Amino acid sequence: MADNVNQPPHYNQAGIECIDAIQAATGEGFEYYLQGNILKYMWRYRYKNKTEDLKKAQWYLNKLIEVKDDSQSILDFGD
Image 1: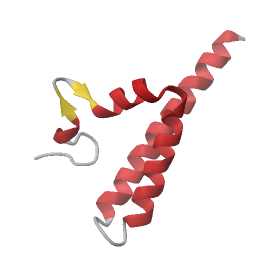
Image 2 (image 1 turned 45 degrees about the vertical axis):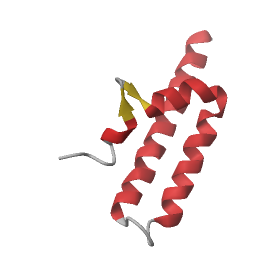
Image 3 (image 1 turned 30 degrees about the horizontal axis):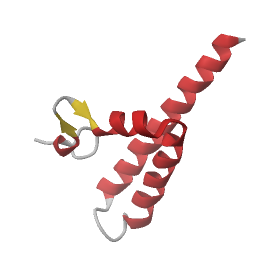
């Protein structure tokens, strides 16, 4: 059964995860992309996919936390 929250099959083509391609293409703007998706899924959850949209918002929030933790680790390593 497909996992439409954590690994939607339509976001993985030719072995490349869409989120990884977006991160590579947007650079520093990637955090804003994640924030926008969190807002989108929070905004629509009552009207569209209910709990699934909340889980998607959570997925994007977890990704944003991961990105921030990684960038902080790089800064801490430089000290």
